[in-house]
Every structure is written in C-alpha cells, then in structure tokens.
Image 1 (tube, one colour):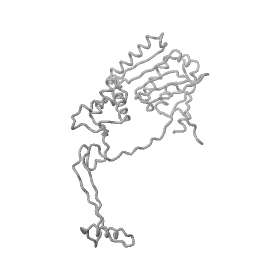
Image 2: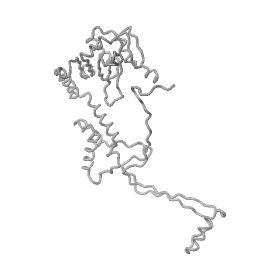
Image 3: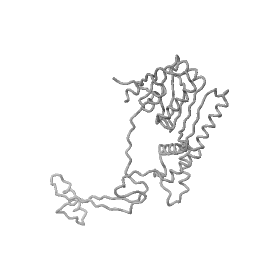
Image 4: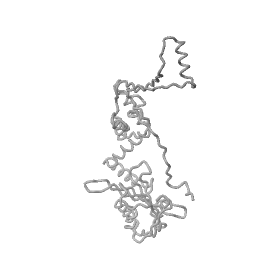
Length: 311
C-alpha cells in the first residue's frame, strides 16, 4: 500500500556527488610512460627497414613475446595541500574566507550573492603571487558552502545581547501599535547563563484566545526545528475549527527540552485559565510528550498519521 504523497514534510534522497582527487593549485605532475620491448628486433636507421619490422610485429599471424615497462617521472614538488597518509582529507574553506563571511554576516550581509561579490573583491586584494585561481574552492566557495557558513555565523550570534534586545524591542513596538497590528499577548525571556535561564518567546493574539476558548478541546502541536534555516525551535499550536485548522498559539524555545516546552505551555495556560483539553495530537518526541502530560494530566494523546508511518 502506497502512502499518500504531498504530506506536510517531504523528504527526498539526495544524489551523492563524488569529488575529484585533483589538488587545486598544486604544480606537481606525475607522468607515466609505457615502453614495449620486442626481443629479437633492433631499430635500424633505415626508415624502410623500420617500416617492414613494424608490419611484422603488428601481424597477428606471427605473435611475438613482449615486455612492458612503465616509467614514472615526477615533476616539481607538492604545494598547498596535505601529503602522505592524510592526503585524502578534503580541503575545507580557507580560514581567511570563513572569517570574512562571518564578518559580513555580523554586518547584516546575509544574501549569498552579495557575500560572494564581497569575497571576490577581498581575493583581488591579495598579493598577485598568492592570488588563487577561480577554480580554487578554498577562496571561491560554492553557493551552498557560503550559505552554510552564513547560517553558522547567525547561529553563533543567536545568544548575543544585541539580537535578543532587538527581538524584545520589536515585540514592544508591535504591542504599542495594537491599532495597526492587532492586540496580542507576548512573553519574552532572554538567554542568561548567570541566572540559568534560556531564551523563550510566547505569542498569542486576542483572536487566537477566542478560537482556543471555542475549539481548544483538541489541538495539534508540532515544531519546525531542523526543517528550516532558523536555528531556534518554533512550536505551533493548532486547533481544528469549522473552517479548518487555525493557529492558537506560538512558542519559540532555545532547545527542544521538556523544561523549555513546559515553560511555554505554562505561559499559554496562564493566559487561558479555563483551558483543559481532552485530547492532543503530537509527534513521537519524548520531551514534548512529557511536557504535555505534565501540563495536562489525564488528557488523551494521539500520534499523527505521518509520524506513525515514519517511526
């Protein structure tokens, strides 16, 4: 029986790309020559005699015993890459280029095309003798490599005070302009190692509170962690209404731990004291299930069809 396609999550097997073994920028060459020796023949100076001997050797009716020798000529020496037993290790992006990408990401340049243009300008400033070829992936990385390093830079700075302060100020701005963006409740907690507190944001609009009070008897909860470019798990609570599924709350946590999920559910529960669902639909995540059972004891839990087929 074939499972229905077009599900919420579609996973496809990626095609493997095998890298070539050529070392970029290395002048060393290995030349192999094949020498075939035919015993019983000599190479005379006369061109006519050499032609006759060649026809005799190539005649399949008169097979001759031969010897093959392979002569190796090594030219120059290896440069700009590892040698020996660890020579097969893939060369990573240059540390200089990696640091440049991180600097650009911190300055707000996060588009791959713009970053590559800045990298090309940076490479042109290098001394002419050290300027690499455009085929050298250490200094001219692919779009995927640049995108990965941009995301690493953003993930590294996700706990910075500046980014957290920007998030808090943005939430305050939206709350003060309720006539434009609508009235909503929010909870913000910054990451603080001294107080052993983790990052947490909980958002719920007044309209979502009304939907929860009417259709919150059963809801679905799921996270988008590791399914998008963002490094923070985003939990979305959805209720089934008479016009389809509608979100009733948003929780953004630092990690997918039981405590983080429970803290987010506690805030939503404080905004909706009468909320006591009879059933919940979720995935097979243990931390999520424990947090739900701790928050709503006695509630019936169901697993979605997608998770049952993929377990």
